[in-house]
Image (cartoon, rainbow, N blue to C red; front, side, top):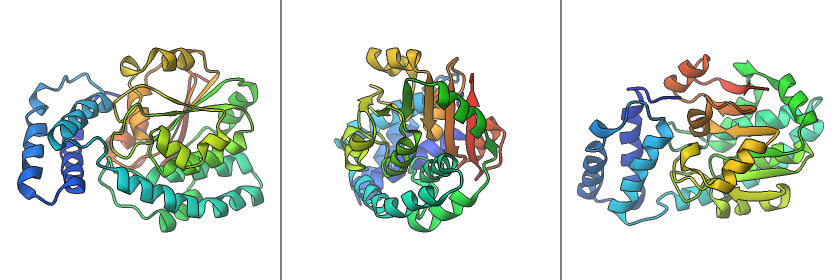
Length: 282
């Protein structure tokens, strides 16, 4: 998905947010915003939002000198999600369609997102979202593809959300390779976040995509990841950033996300706020 003009204000919001996580000095935050704003006229128009995000968050790290401004909030989100884990597992156990319920729980976890600037409350919001009927619901192709798949690549998104990914992975009942970001960016899950979420107990393997972007941008990924991506029988892609980077790839991908902004909703063809289970090339 290529960048829209409407994406630009979001980048500035992310910059202010990241600045306030690391400093109360309004002058320093203004300098960070000015640094990022100066990049905007030179951003290639055919780039995807994660490619732009990579440039912006690299500059934020350079200016602040901090590698992971979101470290504390990620830890808090993981702890909150782990508190809900037993209840979510019970919902799956009691469901007449456990796999679909696990999919909806994984999608509901996508509310944990600091990239869009939308507020969320994990405990109160998660049950509401699980009850939503997805705006696009490709659950039957998902099940058929899963039935045939021998190699499954699961592209994680945010820390905390990773706990709900764990619930779906446990319900897939097949070996899954879980993929995290190469370095801290926004509140996206790194290897350490995935382990804190318990994914080392549920996934067959946890690997890094190698990318420094807030999404899966294939030209920025490692050779090891690209080899697995090109050979996987089934790819499960969580969140908006991964959708933005992979919406046009020629691979069997199932996108699981909540459309948290009008740009994403328009591109997918749903209403803002809808949940989405959309498959391509299945």
